[in-house]
Image 1 (cartoon, rainbow, N blue to C red):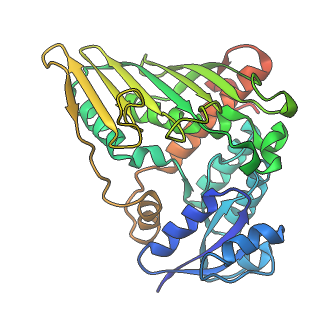
Image 2: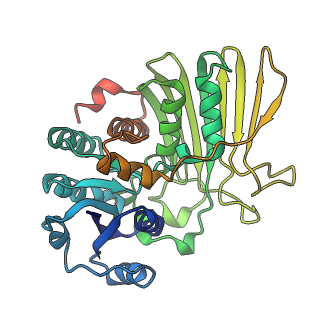
Image 3: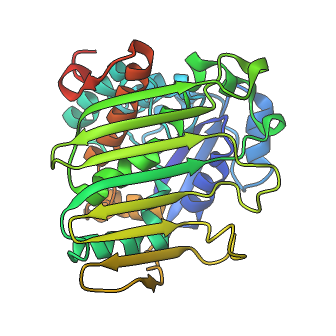
Length: 346
């Protein structure tokens, strides 16, 4: 029997990569795609061999549908995800999962009670350079991880972005949208959860969109004693050959790793092979190749549904990375540190 999925919400361009991976997985079938915005729906049905559903309800009430995928407007994801869970469907979403701690707590509680799986498009874990970084850390090459720094610039391309992105209540802010990748990487490398976070996000370069946060920083303390720092922005220069010069710097007690996911912009290698650079107390500076993942993120998630094997990114991983960025959003709003314990009180 094929795994039958439906798509509800097509408001972000990531919906195309989500559907592409779902359709390319072995033995899958699309029951239909729905979006109340006809242009967004038409963009999908014109690109893929999928039918337009009449409503969200049609897909949620279809007993053959096992999984609901979504790239809905960020603020509108939580009600949709909860509807899907309450209909007995697994869910995979473009990030972010939701935009408030109250929503997250309800999603986590519902998914746990109904024993359903939640997937999130945290694609950084599946990057070959990042997988090499993880292997080096797991094999003890840097000792105990003391700090992880994440650098995540993006190109804005204002004219290509939907209007809802520039309304904070609908978008959720830059940390919720972009830094969730980094929160996940920090947890992945340290093996800990964020205990407290101090963060700030603001508008520095887009005065016409005053409700839009175009730069954000967050500093967190983890349960392992390590710290994590994230800086993300929408300021990739127009002349840059890459969308974002994403980098990770891991500092351990006996070594360091730097990953340049877009190569070296200043060394003539931008957009070529990612770089994994390593040095330790016992090994001089060395450059490593990446490690290809066994399968794409979506295929891995589907296997956890059909085959019973755990997904590489578990429900707990999704919830914890999301919690960290929602703590960061609250910290920026309140102007103070937010603790893990108070995040459950929302």
